[in-house]
Image 1 (tube, rainbow, N blue to C red):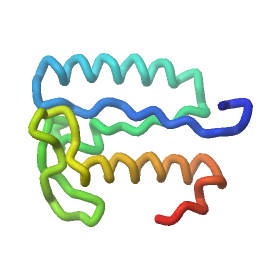
Image 2 (cartoon, rainbow, N blue to C red; image 1 turned 60 degrees about the horizontal axis):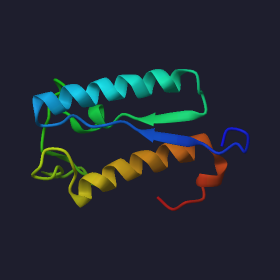
Image 3 (spheres, one colour; image 1 turned 90 degrees about the vertical axis):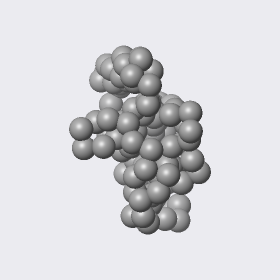
Image 4 (spheres, helix red, strand yellow; image 1 turned 180 degrees about the vertical axis):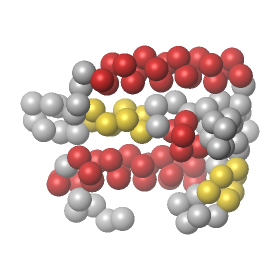
Length: 108
């Protein structure tokens, strides 16, 4: 992909409701971030910061794309509701638009 000038987006894991799962997700994120360090063509979406509260803790309700606070995480404490996935997708599209003119033509 680097040779073809195609941007790559890696989506990091979000904070999890369960403390052990959150610890594991943070470890995986650290490994992925380290792997991305030597690959400047890779962009990362930090879903932890995007979905956690001000202290970095799990929260099920936060602002959607329109700014309305609503349920954004599924009952399992891991996955997202459709508006939560929309928020993640918008972050990915924003990185793609920033990285490549090919994606700037996509509607917002």
